[in-house]
Image (cartoon, rainbow, N blue to C red; front, side, top):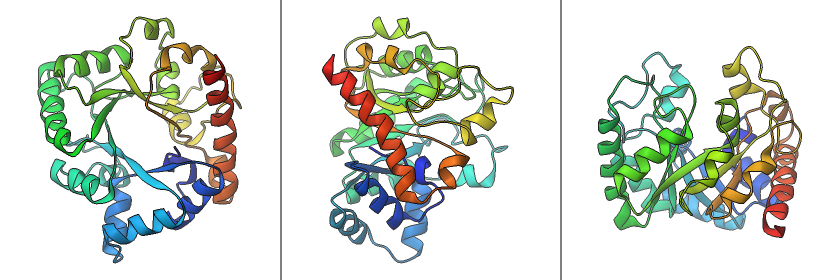
Length: 274
């Protein structure tokens, strides 16, 4: 699947067309995008038809945080706060209307602000809300925020007891957050349910936030040891690319999606071959 960061400067129709031309089957969507489309007069049925006309499916939901004790740090820029503005009810209504199969959950506020028990309770409650709709909830860890690493994400998902939950592993967050691929070998099969691939130069920059949002590379174009993720990720249900890149932003949507697809195809081919 194509995560919209790869084609973030283009409109929704162009993102869909680029994803289809590059060979993707799914385009993830954010609440902010859906809210803007609805304000412009697009109904869920019309959006499903638009995607179907391109031979594409929509989903997962990209960036949901209302499961947590607070939706986001008020210090975040307004554009970021818009991404996390959706309530649980709004998110699941869109999931039902568009047929989204999964929600990417995160906790965009500083670590330690709320006890781990509160995160577990909120996550479990949202998973229970999503379960009757057949929606999976993938918890993403991000080094800067309240679920900072793989260990924390696994602990919350496991403690929730939710059968429709898993961990979303973003390769940039994993490696730049100091993750050790050996950690993955100890996980129960299927604990990692979704993967977002991105590459980066071998050495981390001084400003990690800048690289996170502007300087990632398509898989295979950098120096991260992505091949070390393959054995432990065989059970992942969703495999996609998420590259925040000023260089991709400068390209036409179709070319940006093709560059993302080339890296994903190489990774997926090697994963299945092994």
